[in-house]
Length: 464
Image (cartoon, rainbow, N blue to C red; front, side, top):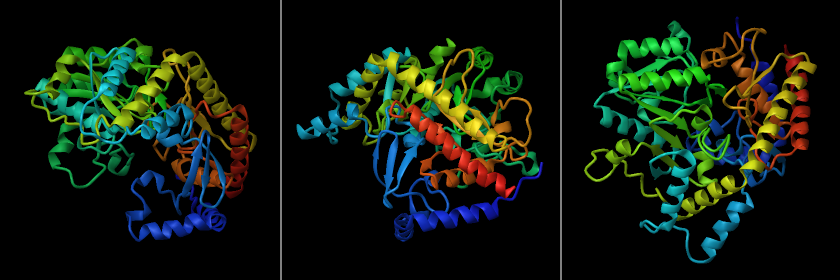
């Protein structure tokens, strides 16, 4: 289906947004004098400019123009307790007041205690910390290649594993020459990377089996998100993950679950446990750090020992790995989630369900066909995540990024650009149409979101 032209609507929304946010506009102009496009993370730099945030607390932001903004982005889905939760900030404040918290360049008790928590809560044998999700997936791939002596990496189309060499193929949908997810997403990488990375289809066990039959003896690892993030907020089918585990074991490949988003999001542990599957390595980040830069590779001791002395894999973690304040935040967060799991997870999952249903109903009432993803399945019974999609027609369920990111299937400009800007004019901030719920959100916040979506839907319908 030919995509609608939203240029006129986007122009109108942009002009209205510029008029109501002059201070953010001014700061954007100043930032562009010193930063590329005015910032350091492209996803945050929405057009025509992002709101410049002055304060953040709980479910709410305040920008430089004084707008109070209801936020569902929540720090790249990090803040399961909301922005700046006192459970974390209070502990950090006490540490800084006592003369602790900044980098010392040494190991300490905090690393040991945090590592014990990660291993106990996830079933991992060993863990090593670093500072970002992209680094964890890069290190996990290095470990898998060294452990197996093989070169090839298998991933799913539309899966995002950070900006690292083996992750930058098959991320963005591109139907030119019917490539879809079979292309490199960045310049500057060796040509060999394109040949080393194999892209398969999410939730398609038959294609996965075919890829392993053809390439299995050369595959070092299969890396995937068991709950797909930017590709559509889609849970893996239980049968698909069982097939992944069986095929990886049969062909001697390392199975890597990227749980940077899903780790500690659904319960106080890995989402893999809900499926009854133990991958060989798992990467964690986001919620793990309690709002501080903490990420980790956890899993089998025989693989992770390659990161040790004489192991051959340069998994140094970086200057700020094991940073005292970051470890303190991580330990505090994990202890809190473990102790309060019965209160945290039913609440955020219930809010997620309400938000998805309310958003779908708001668009339906305005005569706009919208579908939310992020619902659970037989293994994942609830979810605090959601993405709003605009399929061109009612039909089969959206099961993979080949459905959610294909402009011939869904109006991606409407969900990624138009809706985000329309909702900002209602003082609601979303990513991909929705985002994540936290314990700081309330039922009233969900009602506010639904009302804002209803008004955005009226704008959208009027432009059709």
